[in-house]
Amino acid sequence: MKRETIAIHEGYQGDPTTRAVAVPIYQTIAFEFDSAEHGAALFNLEVEGNIYTRIGNPTNAVLEKRVAALEGGVDALSVSSGMAAIHYAIANITELGTNVVSLPQLYGATYTFLTHMLAKQGVTTRFSETDRPEDVEAHKHGVPLIVDNTIATPILLRPIEYGADVVVHSMTKFMGGHGTTLGGMIVDGGKFPWGDYPERFYMMTRPEPAYHGVVYTEHYGAAAFVARCRTVCQRNTGATLSPFNGFLLLQGIETLALRVERHVENARKVAEYLRDHPMVEWVNYAGFPDNPLYAMAQRYMGSQRCSLLTFGVRGGFQAGTKCFDALRLFKRMVNMGDAKSLVCHPASTTHRQLTPEEQKKVGVTPEMIRLSVGIEHIDDILDDLAQALEKARVEAARDVLPVT
Ligand SMILES: Cc1ncc(COP(=O)(O)O)c(C=O)c1O
Image (cartoon, rainbow, N blue to C red; front, side, top):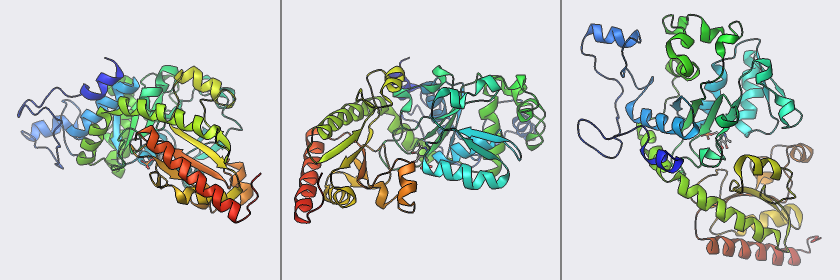
């Protein structure tokens, strides 16, 4: 099936007991065993079935199957947030003395997790200088590649098709899509040859003491990675997705393809509008041929682009904050990927603790505004930007700000 159809149907064909068409919310902690023998067989992994929601839940199982199919993976694990997904994906195959290689451009909490938390547990991270493939080559050295596909979503890009081994998501953003529900997902691409590196990835190839001696590659085959995330990481640390949140995320995913289409179209129109506006100094949008990421984006996403972009208001920090404050439709917050248009002024919020030099290093300038363009009518979005930029212009003139 195509992605649009998978997003609506995969993983659920109706409830056999009640004939419910919508995915039921199995708001239960535990599941009853027929007998001691049945319980033992479940624990021994001899039969399939549910045991306890911290390990797995039927509502979340539908979501997991759906996202695995959307990404072209073999299986998936839903967790309570995007950060829990990132934590588990890394914790699953690292330990004291091992290290991670990462791109330098990361979501802030991922960067902090790697540099300030994981490092204290003896797992260090080496950041590549650039995001060029040769600086982070993985497979050649027997190392799996983990990709955070939160922003592109599988509608725009399926990293497993290009060689990623594991895909993580903050379901909180575009996948859920309505700014209501935290969630995360780990998708197993199923292709990494763990057995070829039995010393490095012994946790996949030798009996696991944390789960009564199971050998993940033998018992779970291609889905060994995600099975271990579930039965070792999630079972023992418990960042489980609530089934109610699983239901809400399923609702969101049903319209993912349609929403992304509108997000993409609106963002392109916003970028073009801003590029031609006299109060706008620059626009960073991967859909413009002079953007450094244009060729790469073209290769992986064709003519489509994600709906995040940044722009600089003429007049520096003051003009930037004036425009930001004047927006009416755009919601001022640090989230992204909501149906609503959202705006963030990094220099005064997310990056305010950094010195101006540090801000520059991570690409944040005083006048920069970040937009997550929503799916409202484009005329209303452009009207809001127009009035806010006009206010910034008038106030800049009044304050005699250096408008150059
Ligand atoms: C790219 C990316 N990955 C991960 C996360 C973390 O997700 P969550 O807030 O669901 O923990 C975010 C949150 O902003 C994000 O933007």
